[in-house]
Image (tube, rainbow, N blue to C red; front, side, top):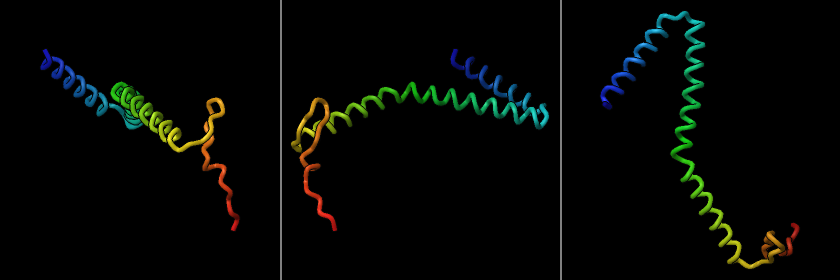
Length: 94
């Protein structure tokens, strides 16, 4: 079964390449733009399928790490706003 699918894909690719060769320069450029646009869309979707979970996991881990660092240094919480004590230091003007 898989060899039939691969063979059909190869035949389709050859047919598309043959049609492209038979077109004029202007239509060939239009076909190339169309194929490039669709390949970018399909590539972005395929990439999204394989990376969405990893991206969310990485973002969650980084947020938890930032919260842990903020809690460890000391400071004041005003509702959901954290103000570290390091912001209250006097700044010397040179």
